[in-house]
Amino acid sequence: MVTPGPAPTRELARAVAGAVPDPEMPMLTLADLGVLRSVEVGPDGAVTAVLTPTYSGCPALAEMRAEVDRRLRAAGFAEVRIRTSLDPAWSTDWITPAGRRALAEHGVAPPGPAPHRAAGPVPLLLSARRPAVPCPRCGSADTEETSRFSGTACKALWRCRACREPFEYVKEI
Image 1 (spheres, rainbow, N blue to C red):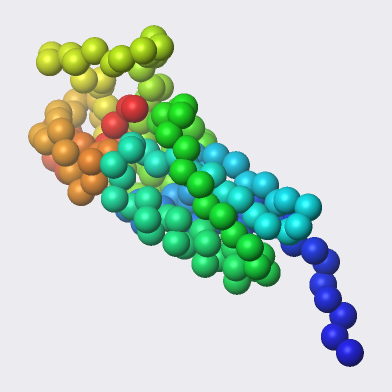
Image 2 (cartoon, rainbow, N blue to C red; image 1 turned 135 degrees about the vertical axis):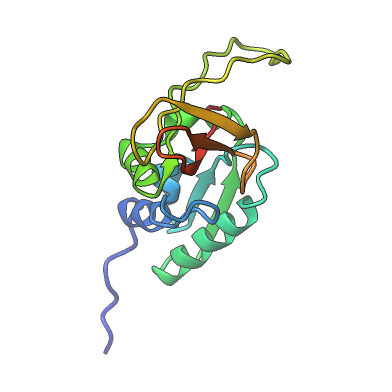
């Protein structure tokens, strides 16, 4: 006779979903990136995970959804629902301190605080001032942006004038 184990819990579901690596920045988990908004387990054992992508057109969202679903089912959750929430919009402020350390350890400059935005439409600023971005390798503030876009839309390409190394920077959103 097989005795069933304990019922899957919200804590287990949160740990499993939160440990999924981001497809575009695999040094970060979805929890560290802040895209895993919530995880709930209903009285029937069904788990619902809510994801907020880094931006509404994020091409990695389908992969995130599929991997969270796959891992939750492998952890014993028979009924899995993955929801996407765009409100409130994701912010770089949601990246955890551990996530910021992981970015820097992998040569990606973590973002500073996200700009404060008033409610309503976002105005188009054609000459927005770029923040000073310290080099994640040598710490120098003598850096320059070489391209507003990098390997993913949420990163920019920078170069350090001191150590002369290129690096990516996660843009404040």
